[in-house]
Length: 92
Image (cartoon, rainbow, N blue to C red; front, side, top):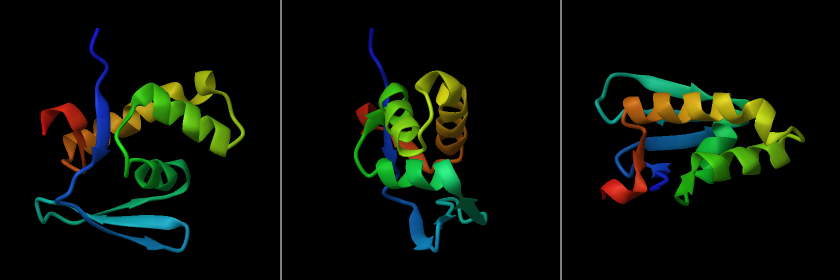
C-alpha cells in the first residue's frame, strides 16, 4: 500500500514571526497563520513526511502520544493540502 508523503509547496511564501508561521496563499487569497503544533509541522515539512512520521515527530516535540494527536495531524495535512500550502511529494 502506498503511503502519501507531504512537503511544503514551493509556491508558498512564508516567514517565522515569533512562535508563529505566516503563510501567503499561492492563490493570492490571503494569509494563514500557524501556531503551536501547526507551526512546528510546517517547519518539519521542509522534508517530505508521511502523516504517521509527522505525528511521531510532533508527539515527541510536544511530549504527547501519537495516538492522542494523530487525528489532528491528519486534519491539519488535509486542510493545508486543500489550500495548496502543502503538496504530496509523489505528485511532483
